Image (tube, rainbow, N blue to C red; front, side, top):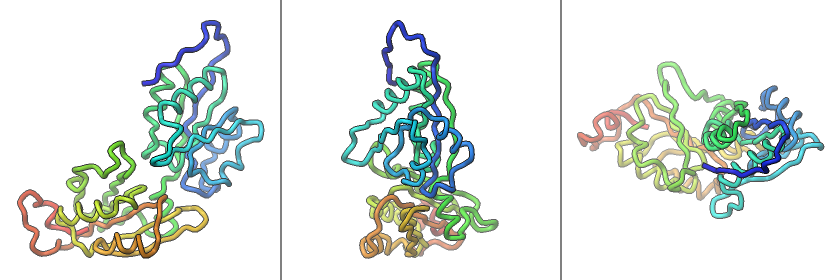
Length: 267
């Protein structure tokens, strides 16, 4: 937790912090409430992947601060962001922390909320469209389908360890659609773990790159061709990898008791 000193003669009324979901790209996917917060803002701290057309909605009177993080190059670690938004709010400013997608989905929102609450700063979350939802909309492929997919499992490949969760395959049940955010660099690990858990190597996979942005792409493949398809098609993050857990028999020869539930089905 970040503890921040502030002047003893501080007398200004405290501002507020709004964690605003910018959606995956297109400005017209913003909610009306998100737009209102942007128009009211005194200062906006925005992520690296925020689309320029969203940034164009910020009033010229508001200060803009790029706090984008990138793997291997990060001059804005999370504790520095926490400190910056808190100090701005303590100075009486209306602060917007503009986040890609939805702040509550892999957006480090809990840490920023805790920092605000530690200092008695009003804070709220304005939901946004997450990348998986936007990709489903653009491909006309719903995330859930009656009688086929009744579960949606979201994972991030940008956790603190830089790896997929060790036990994620055990969370998969028949009728699950799996969405892995920012996982292109871990495709080989994803493939091997799923197949080791009894998943069919012919499982259908969809790669959605630059969702709701210029240059959006969707590429179909199967689990066994996932790595080669990414290389051949030059797929890069930001992207979502969808893998479908279908209600059909799993690949033959996988009847290990430790994988009883998974081995009865295929992704």
